[in-house]
Image (tube, rainbow, N blue to C red; front, side, top):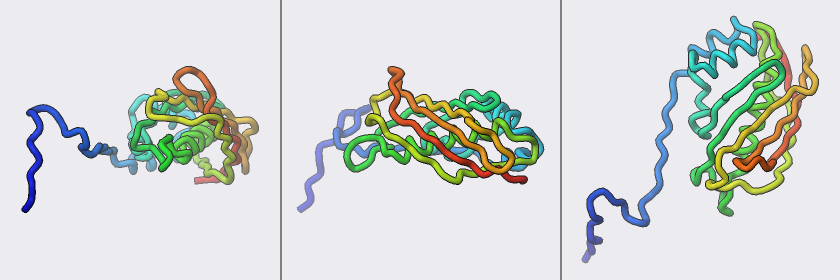
Amino acid sequence: MTMTPPSEPEGTEPADAARRRVIEWEDPAPGFAVMPTMSGLDYLRTLIRGELPPPPIMAHLNMALVDADVGTAVFVCEPDESHYNPIGTVHGGVVCTLLDSALGCAVQSTLAQGQGYTSIEIKVNYLRPVFAGTGPLTCVGTVTKPGNRVAFADGVVTDASGKAVATATGSLLVFPI
């Protein structure tokens, strides 16, 4: 015999209802196609203005590029439970991805038209845990040494109260695209 649980009042969900996240993104191909025709900073500013679709990773991690200038890039990320690891904190990989994005875009902001980059190495120091209730994270990437072949950048992630939650240093390969 199968028992059917009583139905919930209209407009409410059962207490044990599964949480759900729907991720939508635009086709990234148009942005990738024009990137080689623009300086790195112009490309980033076009993304910020919403004139080109953001990379799909932004939707997956609930983050956005909000500012860029020569040698700097600023991202924000709103962590939630879908970012949790098995011990109930936001997974370090989310924070690392945020840092990798900021370091990479900081370097990109220094590149001339027709140049690209990729991460060679990143070292992250986790300073305090991040939870869904931590509030928005702000990540600032700053170029410490631009280069024609290899560039170096640092980054810091702060929580809503301004406390540092992680820092990173990285090296990035610069190449023609």
